[in-house]
Structure formats: structure tokens, C-alpha cells
Length: 120
Image (spheres, rainbow, N blue to C red):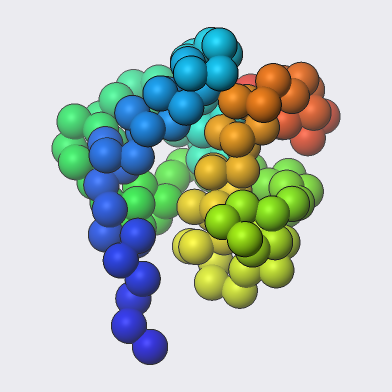
């Protein structure tokens, strides 16, 4: 089976879309960084470096310092699929990130978005 084309999409292309989405809904763009760092273990400098280097999503997640073990608590539907049922680990991580940003945009409480945890 061919690799999904989203894997080759640059993180730098997706990130501004996330920011625009939460800003359109009147939410703080800093919360996007907070949920991404919680999920991936990147710090702010690591996020900026990934954007500047133009890494694709596959590389972004491969280089992630530490995928949060509580990410398995993320459930729900994104792009018509239940995130907990996605079999491909990389696609699941990408959809986890999408789901977290959606929850920020909807105004869900940060403690709930971070599954009871704190940002890294």
C-alpha cells in the first residue's frame, strides 16, 4: 500500500492552519503550541526549528522527543474516523494532533484537552 500523502506534508504548512482555526474561534494561538508540546514532547524551540527546517509530518513525529503516553486517552471523530480506531500509528498521531487543535478551537477546558495532565 502506498504511503499516505499527508505524511509528506510539511509541518510548516499545517501549523499556520491550526493557528488560523483557533484564532477564528476567538481562542489563544498559544494554546496550539501547548497541546502540540504536550502531545509530542517538543519545546518551543523544537517547534520553531521544525517549522524553519520544513520537516514533513512523518519526520516531525519521528523526531518527537516523547509522544505523551496519555495520548491514547484521546478519543472521538476527526475527518470521519474515530481516532482510537486508526491502525497506522503515524496517521493516528497526526489525527490526535488534529483532534487536540479542534478541542482548543471549540473552547474545551485545557485540563480536559490534556487529559487531566499538564503541558510539558
